[in-house]
Image (cartoon, rainbow over all chains, first blue to last red):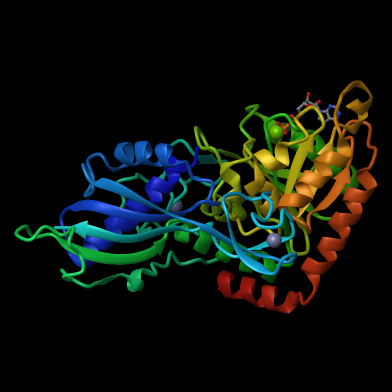
Amino acid sequence: MHEMSLCEGVLTVLEDSAKQQGFKKVKKVWLEIGVLSGVEHEAMLFSYDVVVKGSVADGSTLEIIELPAQAWCMQCMNEVEITGRGEPCPSCDSYQLQISSGDELRIKELEVE
Amino acid sequence: MCTVCGCSEGETTIEGAAHSHSHDHEHPHDHSHDHSHDHEHHHHDDKTHDYGQGPAHAHAPGLSQSRMVQIEQDILGKNNRYANENRSYFAEHAILALNLVSSPGSGKTTLLTKTLTDLKDTLPLSVIEGDQQTANDADRIRETGVKALQINTGKGCHLDAHMVGHAMEPLAPEDKSVLFIENVGNLVCPAAFDLGEAHKVAILSVTEGEDKPLKYPDMFFAADLMILNKIDLLPYLNFDVEKCMAYARRVNPSIKIIQVSATTGEGMDTWYQWIQATHQIAMIGYQPKLAAVDADAKAA
Ligand SMILES: Nc1nc2c(ncn2[C@@H]2O[C@H](COP(=O)(O)OP(=O)(O)O)[C@@H](O)[C@H]2O)c(=O)[nH]1
Ligand SMILES: [Mg+2]
Ligand SMILES: [Zn+2]
Ligand SMILES: [Zn+2]
């Protein structure tokens, strides 16, 4: 699945910033992944180890911070939290939801040396 | 696969693109392939900033040289930038780009060849064929007389925006044309990769489960049109069309749904009306002079 190419995207950013910031080694990477982003954490962790082998991030740890999804329920006029698209409002069961967040795929910060 | 460059360790091949740079290259793309759309491979990395070893970061071990670097970058940022370059190229040339996505075997190629045959006399058309189900789908397309370019993604599970950008020069879609992009048969990965298309069109056949929109909500959320294909088979199946449409609207209340049979032709007129209408929208504001001046400047 596409976790492999996402990890390659992560590595590109790591390599670019290693050059810009002048660090030699990445020890830990924090990613923010929304619950609606369609990313499987296990696959991401597995792909990461494979992709960073032999790179500036070889042997580094990947830390995934899962971000919740927020939606506005047009039925009960509440800001609610959901865990998937196509799910009903947790307080009134309506499907009339406007999803406002949850598809994040971001590199947040790095520990480097 | 290289997400920056879209060229997967020699696996991705784009017909006629002669794109064979080695992958120890340090991006940014110092190789000089000509992109028809003149994109520079920007690096918007200036957002990166270093805030050293703040005391708030207890996870930075005290004695080592460790420090924290705050990055705040979108993992798909590069693909999204290529997609935006494609999108402005399409806008400038009034090209309607449609990204066709489905599971393997839902009927993308069949729908496409039928569509090309029926529309080629009324609209300029071209095809990017990214589906790897059969090696020579592009030949099936070319038999209709419409120009097509095959992109073999190798083991890749989706097309990305940079591959599509590279395809523009060898394919050379006309101004005011419709460009169909048949994506890899997969309902997961192509949802995440914007190609710069005007619309994603999700094809679902009635031989699949009616709950597919719920199982793959990201794709049905990303699509503007759902084509329910193979309706000629409905009499032989237990497929609840109403339920399927309700599920699709549950994940995407504004999705449009068309029922067709690509083999009998039933319902295809509605699909063609949708293409004509969105093509009209793509042509609004088109300035042929601008494009011509651009071409002159390039020739000079
Ligand atoms: N009965 C029926 N079969 C179809 C229809 N559309 C496609 N098929 C068949 O479904 C199979 C897969 O079609 P294809 O176009 O290769 O699917 P793709 O993998 O999405 O490109 C082929 O055997 C087609 O003949 C349809 O409308 N009705
Ligand atoms: Mg196909
Ligand atoms: Zn509610
Ligand atoms: Zn390239």
